[in-house]
Image 1 (cartoon, rainbow, N blue to C red):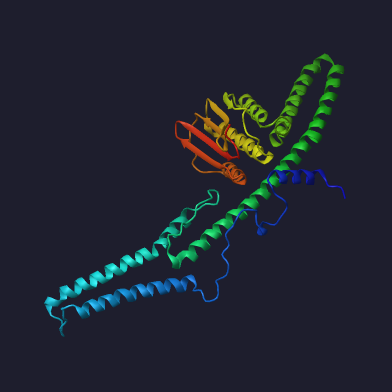
Image 2 (tube, rainbow, N blue to C red; image 1 turned 180 degrees about the horizontal axis):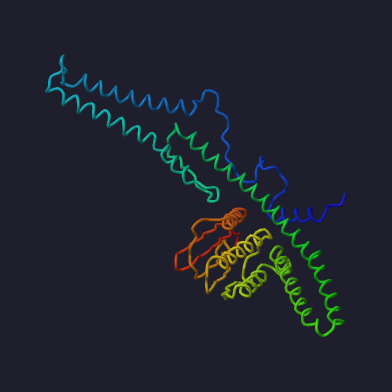
Length: 362
């Protein structure tokens, strides 16, 4: 059976994002630490922690008992008033030593709680270090392995979702161009013939309709180009970014200062698409929210990296990260890139994407 154009487009977008149609549960190619089942005879984390606390408390009370037994101090029955300070000091010392030992023993749990509160899958790489606390090593490794697994599964699911999104973009762009665009072109040609045969009193109105139809046809073409950047596939990343900046300036009236260096290392189609989409979304956010009078678009090579930067002099307010910024972060994660967004009220917003490459410096 012959594949439909939609299936071909979806598979093509999937190849861009490195998706091979595998199930997310079977891994994404990243190294994920998965702790195996406890070995026979090994204590569980709960048993190990209980044993440590029991030993610590027993050791403190044993030392306290030995000190009391070997010291010249005596305890009368009933207890004399002069003996109360000695007992109080001894009890305070035992509690203080016990508290210090317990605090040191349970410190990794405090660090684990703090990390659990701030961890976010869109900000990967946060892990808890094992400080040598043997009883909590299993817990720390299990938590870090869980983060590895969640990040790998999210990366795989995001790759599938974005590949499907790119496939749908290509399908819609193709339908806009092949069906709606051609239909409008046929109507425009028919309208031109009607204008040529129309009486003079109707020609002005028909000319106005003709211009409106031509403007709609241009809008359809512009939407199709935004959905499917053919210039990126045909002419490369630099030409696509130049075309994007030109279109942005024409639509918004905001000038774009371009600093696009040609001496870039070779980039995969996946990385070029991510760079283009993040630049596109950044410029869209500038047009919608920034109220800027100037935008800087730069792309340069650094040692082992390619850096995209979109900066404006607008309001500089990012109150919360919406779907657009989350989508940018998900795209950055697909190519192991780092996305930094710095917004300073009254100064502007600076979006910086660092894409790792091998041999990036020249």
